Amino acid sequence: MIFSQFINKWLYSNDGYYSKYKAIGKKGDFYTSVSTSKFFGGTIAKHIISLIESKKLDENSVICEIGAHHGYLMADVIEFIYTLKPELLNSLEFVIIERYDDLQMQQKKYLKECFGDAIKLTHYKDLSELSCDSAFFLANEIFDAFECELLHDGKFASVDDDFKIAFDVEDEKLFGMAKKYNKDKGEIAVGYEEFALGMYNSAEKFEFLSFDYGDKLARNDFSIRIYSDHKVFPFFEENLDYKKLYKNSDITYDVNFSHVKDAFEDVGCTHIETKAQMTVLVDFGILDLLEMLRLNVDEKIYTQELDKVKTLIMPDFLGERFKAIRFTKGMK
Image 1: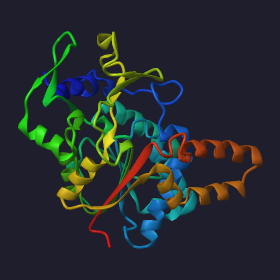
Image 2: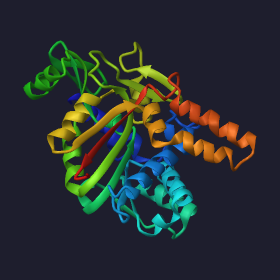
Image 3: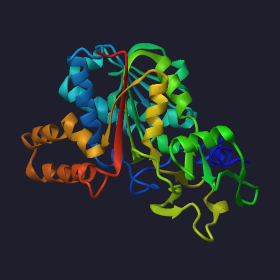
């Protein structure tokens, strides 16, 4: 089978890695910005409020997270909206796009525990099911989870039933994509174009904000790797036990943000910016939120939260490695 089909089975089949709830953080396979600090979601909430106050988004907008895992990020966003501008909970609609029933159940349970009937929450399995006038779309580490093909020496990878990889597939369309980004080795993501079109068609106006790790320009090498129990295994590591890791671990690669940008611009969206996570979070007001916390809690609690936020924004941690990319449609 071609490599993208292999990843699809690994991650997205009925018994794939993402099909069932997985812990994130100390008990999981990896950390994310969401598992690091509530102020990640809080800063996004502050930005959403600013868009509504400036009339760029409507008060009755849909706040939509794509791939919400347990629901922690959505919960943090809602909590800070309630703290900063509680009346918006009466008008905003919250939506999660989640293909798996098991994860939908986890998200509904968690958000019900957090907010009871105070919010309006709707689930869809695909963006194509959503149609609205005004929306804010949010995703965290989604583009690195798309299927990809692997390129080397002008050919693409296939995988046999014994997990042996060979570069023996020719595909002119994919090779043209590789040439566009000056790649002769590495990953070519599959599905960005369809995803961008689905979002474009789902709302009359929106802002889309996504965080992921990668580079603004394509990396001309393999970055694909496997995460299991907080250990990282380069995909081509010698003597790697693919059979043991298959469907029991996460598989990911660095995002080529140029490809993401082109996919959204090609369907008619406007690219606002691609910046380091630390820059965007500071621009959105994470330091203002910290100052509000400092004025309202004791020093011990403030210091604890400050240390967590440092992990989000310091260059040596998540601040520089992770990027934020933003797009709009129909907003003035």
